[in-house]
Length: 169
Image (cartoon, rainbow, N blue to C red):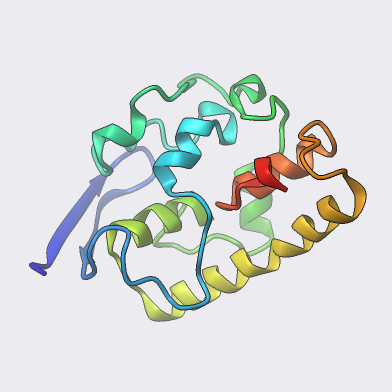
């Protein structure tokens, strides 16, 4: 694979560069097996349509085809389950969940990882965080009838934000 350098110019990063060293959507860490691709997540409806609206140049154009976006604000009605399951970025920062390379958080990391960027320490940390979300899947399974998508919609939306297909739980 020919390595490629990506240069980012968006509202949160100016001139940030990273190298793609793996094929798109391939060679994930063995314990990292998300149900959904970033494209599928965007098309289902995540982050109130606001997340990464200024990042279209960084990622494939087809990721945004048919996606409901809201450039002005976070709109929970655009989420798959129609509810707000997000915390403000300031909360993420206060909890230490933001790495300087990915100032928008986990989903930005996942998009870049999916595209082929690898950063071993950061990747291991984010994958541990992703795996920890399974506790919410357990809560849904323990408290909802299988296929009852209206049971715990906020928790289902949050799980969807992490690449788990909560529609099938």
